[in-house]
Image: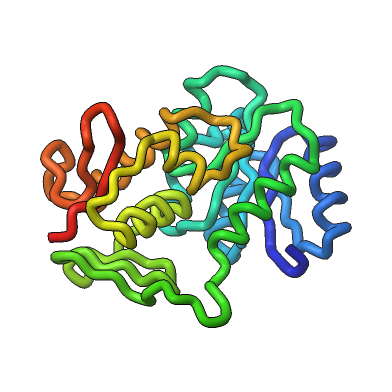
Length: 231
């Protein structure tokens, strides 16, 4: 992760100091913000590889910051929450977060989650057999540039939304259970449950479907899981 640029957002300065020290030991570039408004200003004026964002912040909540960042950037966001409440985690995903970690956390866990996300979004090197571009109807997926388009217009997908769609499009008509999607996209050690998948599928449909309640591309196989229909 050397050379990666990270934004840490938390109003607890000791937590920020500890995370910053550890990341800088890995030769990462680290900026810090201590309230929601400062975080938004930094996110708008810099290109970050990943953002660690606390939920409980002065001025703007982490949810509000996440939602506003998603209006102009698809940078990976990991939410930090002091609560064990599932609703906090689900809300974070609803607002466009890629992952969440519950406080108190081990810095090694934070770095492992960061590495997992950054590894997945690195451009594929070498002789990959995966196609660079996948098309279906008016939907086009640029696998190398990690961008999605509808009728030539780019749509903003989060890291996980892109990975779910890429997997489904590369395997049309193959039904994936929610458990299988969770394992493939989030990893076998991911502590979340299958509701994470449902949230991302719902958000994905809102972005790529003309009528999310009657999807054209991402379909539900009732009682089993989800699949992509190649139109």
